[in-house]
Image (cartoon, rainbow over all chains, first blue to last red; front, side, top):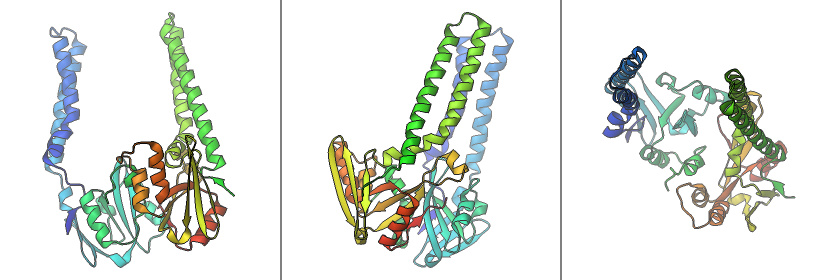
Length: 177
Length: 190
C-alpha cells in the first residue's frame, strides 16, 4: 500500500490555515486604519502600510510555497517483503528483516516515525535525527514518515516487533487499538 | 524491599525546581509592582531592568528542573515498586486508596528505557533512565490515554497499573531487571 511520507492535508488545512498569520497582520493594519482614519502622523502611516505590506507579502510567500509543495512526491510503499521509498531523485528499499528499530520521536512539535536499519548504533541513530530532518537524510539506512493513523495502522500489520515510544501516542490520545 | 519509583535524587530536583520557580515568580512580581507604582521614572527603569534579569535568570535556571515536572504525570508521587527473580510489584497510594499489582516476569511483554534528563542535565551528560514496563498493552494505554475518560482518577490509575507502569531506577536496579526479565530492553535513540 502506498502512502505519502508527510501527513496528507485536506484542502481547508492546506489553503486556508496558512493564512492565519497574514490575516492577523492584516487585521492590525485594518485596526490602525479604522482607529486612525485621519492619519496625519507619518509614523502611523508607515506602520499601517508596513503591516499591510507584510500581510500581502506573507500571503504571497505562503501561497507560492503551497503551490510548489513537493511533499506529495515522496512516497513510501509497504509490502510483504519490506518498504519502498520513492522520491523524485531516489528510490530506496528496506526489507523488514533489515529494520533494526522503529522509534516514535518528535521533530519540533511533529510526531515522526523513524525507521532505522539494524546495523546502526544508538549514536548513529540519534545523529540522523539531530539538527533537523530533511529528505536528504533518507538513505538505505534511515527512513522517516510523519505520524498519521492510516500509515501507522498499516505499518503495524507488517512490522510485528514493538515500536519504541508507542506509549507516547497513548499519552497524546492518538493511540488506536 | 520497596523502592520509590521516583528516585530520591529526582524527587529533590522536582522540589528544588518548585521552590526555584516560586521564588522567581515572587521576586519578579515584586520588582514589577515596584516598577509600576514607582513615580520616579529613572528608579522605575532600574526596577524594570532588575525584573527582566530576575525573570531570565530564573527561566534559564528552571530549565534544569522543568523537564522533571512532567515525570510526576507519568509516575504517581507515591508510587513504589519492588522486585525479585519471580515478579515485579507496584504499589500506589491515590488519595488514601491503595493500589497493588504484581506482574510475573514471564507476563511482561515489553520493557523500554528512555532517558528523562532535563535539557541542562542532558548537556552535562547526565542520564535519568525511565523504564516503561508493559504487561497488558491495551489496559496500560487505556490508563494513560488522555482521551479516555474515567469516572474517577483512581479508576484511571487502577487501569494503568493493571497493564503496566513507569519507574525511574538506579543502574543496579536496571541490571537486575535486565537479568530477571531475560529479554532485550529496547532503548530510545537519544
